[in-house]
Image 1: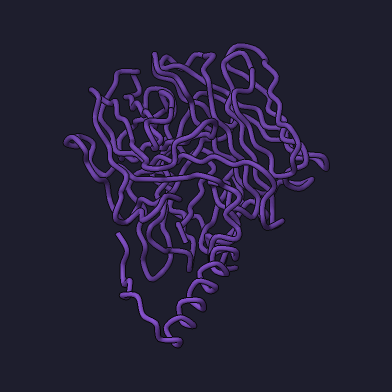
Image 2 (image 1 turned 45 degrees about the vertical axis):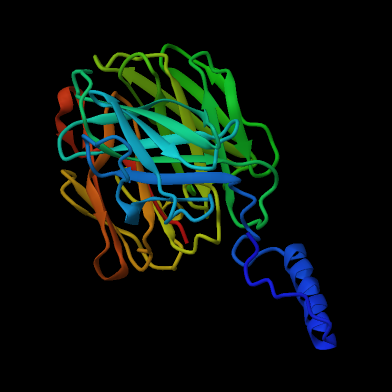
Length: 369
């Protein structure tokens, strides 16, 4: 189809205009488009919030909480199919390819966790499989947020740092990325324990944000950041995973680290993002707001209320990960609110048996823009 094609003419002025138009098109093709010059990291990404725990076939989740790097996300949305009780596949269009990682967080006022069963290209898209569970380990329907992202090469902007790891249960790295170009590694400890090394990232003190998600297609498992040791040459992160009986368990898992970057890798854009780590206090450099405001923590822990002023820009997403020893896990109590341009994230954490507890956690929010 050729739009606005004029009939041939011998008029010199039209010939000149045609040549000028061709030159303009060539020049536009040679220059990077506005807003994409910093899109080298990530290469491909998408996120969504499944707001219906029993979606009909081909369900389009909340449009204000989904977006991605493909062409026209608003006209070509994410879709979700339910495969069985507590089992879902999220279809991200046009971003299929090798590698990458995913994260998922349950959004439920009752004790649930959601984990990844895996992800793979499907035609031109990327399918991410999500399973959700009750504290007993029985599958159960739940709403959730899900994020897929893949990065390669050096970032177009040097701001901050970013990296990720996807490890199998033996500690073999299946896919990884490090914005410094270094290679992330994993060493296996005792059952359910791994040590990830992210060289060159972050600062020598606590700075940035971590997210971890279990990957297991066979049974319920939840993973967390058990310990974190920043250093002048990189970040050491201890990952711990547990089964539904709260016993240490060897699962696959994904880990991402971001400092002055959004949870899926980019710096600016997006222009609106933030993160917070609560470990009994709020270490300053782990509490970041891209608009320079101060994030705050309120609530009793059932749930906590994390307020990030000035950053609320739909479409947007959030992830949460538990921190510390023991088999507890965290999620979002409800979808985030956007009062007066702020974002409010409602974080709830649970101990053995699904008892609500006031426990440490990481949480991260990002807009698409």
